[in-house]
Image (tube, rainbow, N blue to C red):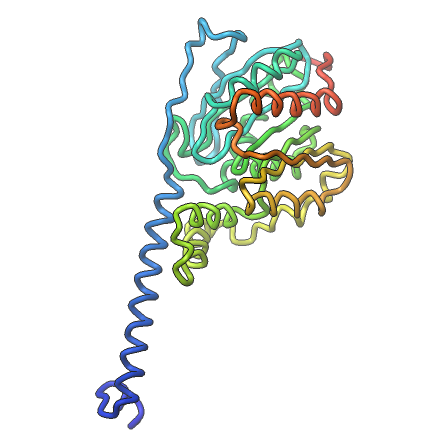
Length: 312
């Protein structure tokens, strides 16, 4: 009892020092949690960019496709038609990006007779909400594929997916459970969504503060508590046996390059690996962008030919 009394009303120098240290640690911890919580809030609600085109004049004759995501509401995507009955390539944009930033890749694929579809995830484009870095986004992707598979001008059982960071996680998660996915291009993919939280905290420079990254990860996990039992993607890679996969690593994104490499090593055949100097397709220079598009198109042509399949 005297020990607690001494801590509460310190009279000796060492208990005064101990009390001051404990009080400082408490307030530092509290401040860290508060800053981490605010930081995560800003991360999961990124600044949205415009995502509109003139459907009547834009090359490629796109159609606006409406679909609904259970629990998230209505979504709209752009469908660019290719050869009737050909596979459909769905492009999944990255964090803080949008469908409009992928239009040159759309054109490169459509030029080779693929049907191509792009849409915006939650908290991107004109869509409200927050990002979950792949948990709910894979549900949005599944709803888009279900809608496209019901069309009469595509092969309902033949889809290819391309994704970058956030979009790559959603694509891989969907591919592991959807037999309609026949080929995957995964650019800067991660194993668990909280890895992307760490990347974004590092980008702010606040990772230098003790426990800031861990506090942000805990805040993100709390926001997505319903997915606490969700295993890492690496646990289900065996489901992608016989599905061709291209893993793309960017040298200027070391954290994501490491996670991409780790998933490549664990993935079953067939698999391919590509290393590029710069990440973020939307921000590449024109020569780098053309080389990137050629690599992606070549992969799909080799593993998912744009030939006419069954239609209804």
